[in-house]
Image 1: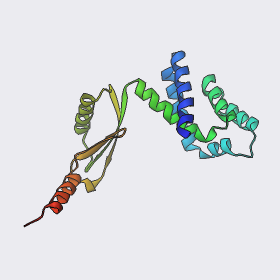
Image 2: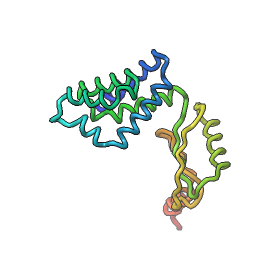
Image 3: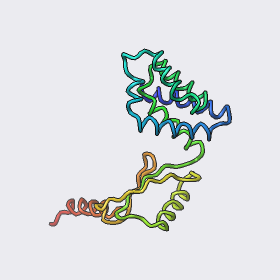
Image 4: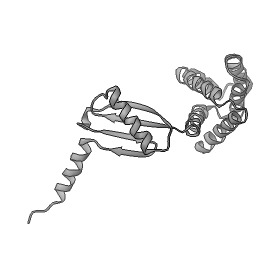
Length: 182
């Protein structure tokens, strides 16, 4: 059910942005809004609190966001609040951001390597990702995990490419356990 809610509202906001030719502006506002909710969890608690009336919640939204965000964003937050979907705001915004990246052909990758990669290595990884996919650019999150020993693990959505030495050693160990000496 939650997936249906986030996709319904996220798609509606996305279609509105396309209709008004304001996708970039709307995406920037949604990024700021998502950060605001992440940095102020009390605001989300207030918007989802069962003992606070919808009218009070709408008033809070208008007081905080009106003038700082477009009327479309403020109206969107009001609708979400009036429909008791406040608990899904972060998921809706996350869905919208993913939809924008998909539309702009921006891939999201997570790269884990045994050691920190240099700028040149990162550039080569990104170039290879662009060659192997239909994306035009990438947002890459790099991290290190010394237990990989060497190589890297790349995740793009639900696809994983694991070229780590740890995995290769694990695979060899499993193969050797299957060998029976006669």
